[in-house]
Amino acid sequence: MDTLIHKRIKQVLKGDQNAYSDIVKSYQQSLYHVCYRILGNQQEAEDVAQEAFVRAYINLHTFDPKRKFSTWLYRIATNLCIDRLRKKKPDYYLDAEVPGTEGLNMYSQVAIEERLPEEEVERMELKDRIHYEINRLPEKYRTVVILKYIEELPLQEISDILDIPLGTVKTRVHRGREALRKQLGDV
Image (cartoon, rainbow, N blue to C red):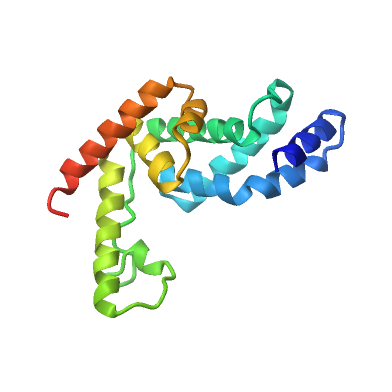
């Protein structure tokens, strides 16, 4: 896939603006998911993902073709997410009740596979608790935990995305995991 992306980048740099749509299609869903996991809000994640694509397009001439495009793009998006988190304190929570309903939260709106009701309730409660506790982590730990354990990115790629040394990433993953373990306690 990298070969195709690098070919499209060359076409864009030569003036073929339509080639960029292929790049966007290739990364649209995965970039949105990274943004959503970091921000926890659909509209903000869509906005940030779109802004990341715009910034990548504007700065495409600065991209180093020796590197992975996805790492460069994720780095742009992650930095935009971090900036957005710093500017805005959360005024919503995914486990908050949906207005106009009785006892339903945003997680109840997610489609799920068929399971026994008891298993589903336990799974939903655990998922809610884990997401809640991840969101309580300090920003620097939350970001690496999401990229490592939810997005399943390799440590080196996280290092490249966040532009921090690999050792720092390892430390933050370890400390974030330990903080999460302490927060979850009895689970």
